[in-house]
Structures are given as C-alpha cells and as structure tokens.
Length: 280
Image (cartoon, rainbow, N blue to C red; front, side, top):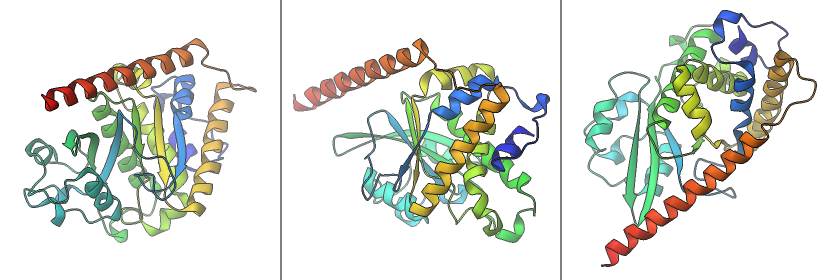
C-alpha cells in the first residue's frame, strides 16, 4: 500500500484507496513540514539548540519508566543527553503522571519541566525493545510499530502549547539490523502512516498547530540518506497528486508563519511575567 511504497522510496506500485484516510494533498503538506538537521536531539555539535515552544521527543522503552531514580533508567545515549540538558538526571523518579502513563508498549506523555529558569517541553514515548529474532522477517510488523509510535506522538502534541517537534529517528538499539539500511524510508513511511491513522479532527489540529517537524540525524552519512529519501517521498506524493510542479500553500503558509510569530510573542510575554513574579 501507500505506506510500504513510501518506505521503499521509489516503488511504482499504486496505493490502495481504502488505506488512505488523508487527502493526498494534505499528506504532501504534512511531509513538507519535515525539516532535516545534522546533530543529536540537542543540536550538538554544530546545530540549532532547542527553540521555545519546541517539544523534544524522548524515545525510550516502556520498562524504563518505573518509580526508581531517573539516572538508573535511561539506557540510550540520546535520553541520557536529554535528561542532563533538562536537569532531571538526578531526580529520584519521573513525575507520577508520566510513570502511570506507560502501561503499554506504545504510549506517550507530555511533561513541562521547569528547571534553571527555563521551560523544557518533553514528550516521552515508549517503543518496544526486542531482540532481532523477535521481529518478523518482513518490514510490515516493524513498520506498524513505527507508525503507532508516531501516531501517539502526534496525539500528544495536540495536548501541548508547542508548534514544533524535534526528534531523532529510531536508533540502532530499537531497529532490527536487517532493516537499518531502509530506516530513512521506514521513518518517513511511519510518520505519514501515523498521521494518516489520526482522526480527521486530530489531523486538522496537527496541520494547524505543527509549524515544523525537525528531524535530527546524528550521523553525517545517514543524514545524506535521509535527505535523498525525503526528496523521493515528496516526489511520490507529487506524482500521486498528478502535479508536474508542486503548488504553494500561498495564504495558508503565510497565515501559519504569522500564527507562529504570535504564539512566540505570547510565550515570551508569559516568561517575562513569570520572571517578574519570581523577582517579587
């Protein structure tokens, strides 16, 4: 179907209409919100640091969200760096509502951490950790889990004040070795499939709220693969829409930018008010 086709980059297969809940033109504009950057989730070594009203996605395993100390639970380097940056690596436990949220393999929970005079918007999300042999030989099962992961992230985004998402692709510790060369296509296919599985109202909220989905790629060679793959996905959607020249969002695009600037200005005023209250 369409999503396996996207995962395969340049397949000529036509999509099955019953698998596509989103209008193809909306799907195209959703993918156009993806922006690639080199570096880890914090932008190191030379990238852009996290921005105001940008939710950072913390990808980890369900079992790690227990009542124990935070420092004893994060196993991945990405989570380790993120928790140090936020300032929670020394906490005795995660917030209670975060711990209670993770009862299933693919759950997500947003939390606003207030540390060192800064606001850190984090969406914790769990992905099943399995040994390679525990995954099927075909990509379908893994692709389904990837789509479910991103669906929960988008649903959780709708509960936040954020209009940007920042994430890194599913890492080697979660991906079967035989699928690693296909991860750029699987990532984009999973993002599109996760968006497609939202309700119409949720899709509308995401399209209105999400200004940019920033995908950070730590490895330079992988970054080139993701760049090529993204171009292929957009070309697929242009072909499926019957476009020889991609259209422009026009006024809608300008309205989104203006709304983003207004949201940032409101955020700055809120921060200033909070700082003034603390000063008193």
